Image 1 (tube, rainbow, N blue to C red):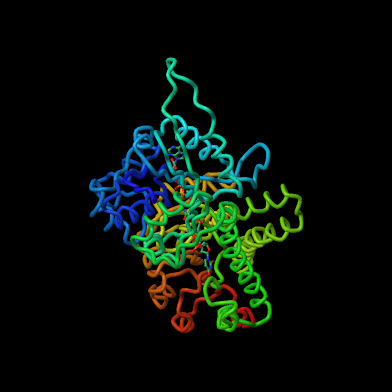
Image 2 (tube, protein in one colour):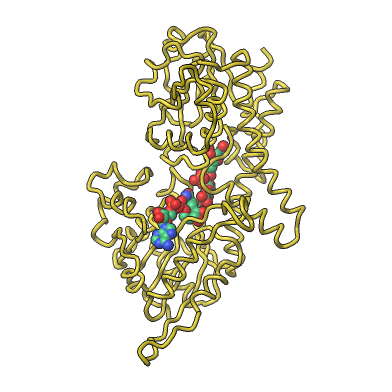
Length: 479
Ligand code: NAD
Ligand code: UGA
């Protein structure tokens, strides 16, 4: 018999937990969904009356929150209480790369997942289905089961009421900026597990809005590994097209034309072939490095090297862009004003984790540039924090010891005044609408426009006296 799920608890109110639970609650009005987080500020933000203060920005998210928050969707810090009440618990906590110890720099740090498993083991009641929503190394379900199945001690001579668990893997494939659409119309929902009843109980939730043919069942290890593999394949495509883009610039070819030509091959497909400043985001690098670690651990160094090269190329590519800018601006950026347009790792999100903008801006600051940074959704505080994350000596190299780390630009056309260069790093739509005739009048000559996102209409800039570079365009490098 399929278990009726009435009460869900999701541990982790982040980029995945928040939107995913919002969509489940929207389509399952009979289920109470409690999203819990140990971070007080984050929960306050989720509960804010002013929806512009939600902790994450996702198109469509505010509408859902305004309709069902307080009805069957709740955000709270009461982790124990909601674990106790839940018959299904999603673990949706962060799994970043380990910073120290064995596997540092590659393996996933599972301390938050382990803490969840211990909390569930202590606080749950009766039978609970545990769903791995976080991206995890293959065989993590085994670790979770081991923690959950530790025999419970006797309390006051009385046997504690028996607790039983099923563990399922249900990785999330949403992409930021598109999260609500990805959740409402997923390409597939993947459920890995052993117990048919538990699998059916989770499937039944998704069947409220996902067609049955899109719900895939696999064994638990395949499900865990499929998530890492999907991200590795996607990232690999970006490194591949960026590598070809560099070759285009040297040969007179155009990466957009090459992408179009290969993308029409149905075996290759047209998506994920946009050359840009390198992939960012919290997951691609971490998940590939995790795959690298697993391959090494299981004695497969060639497999490890193959995937590691995808990350190495991405880093080289980011460096290539900052080096190219220095070269075009006569080998020095000292006190040169450069407008950075876009700091988020992609458009339609306020997330800056692993954004290529961070590495590129740090490199430009090191060369002495004055950076004026704009992003429609990223806060100045976040930009400041990201650029201070590592201690660099560039501050001391500034004349008068000025701390010219970042500036929030409010009016792009005004702030172009006396700028030596503009660098577009995120594909926000508004950057495609800049008036380049006006820009050409007020920038300091010779002025450069670097478009790392192919967002500028090349015809609109050709008629100006601005120097123009865009990613992977060999025709520009040849002139
Ligand atoms: P996040 O950092 O935005 O959110 C994680 C939240 O978990 C944080 O708010 C943190 O305070 C909370 N948390 C950690 N340990 C806790 C505990 N013991 N008790 C209560 N709360 C706790 O992370 P995210 O971006 O939502 O990613 C979560 C997982 O989903 C990761 O494994 C990630 O790889 C995966 N994933 C992320 C995305 C994405 O687009 N961000 C997409 C698919 C999968
Ligand atoms: C990615 C995957 O697309 C999701 O399926 C996955 O669930 C998620 O990682 C995760 O596990 O966290 P996300 O990182 O949100 O989603 O965004 P993507 O759209 O994949 O973009 C990642 C990076 O690649 C961005 O910096 C983006 O600008 C870049 N990119 C993407 C390109 O440079 N070119 C492209 O053609 C596509």
